[in-house]
Length: 92
Image (cartoon, rainbow, N blue to C red; front, side):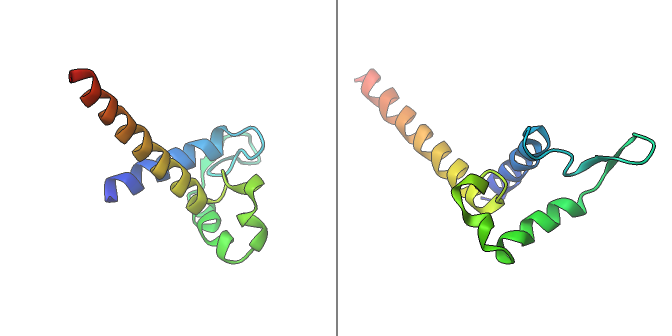
């Protein structure tokens, strides 16, 4: 489960940075235009859903780590189980 959390957290952080609607979350340009690593912004986004109710609206589910985690975790497990069932059926 720890590995799952680390992998999904990494996917979430990359998604935040590559998402066209919210970018420059943890890689932000400074005054000189050089990218700076700002990991504290990720911590702020981990806390924000417990401070702001709007973070639980479906439009923000990709930004909210907890909804992102639930969606990715259960989707992944569903796909794996589906694949296992079909592998067993194919062998019979």
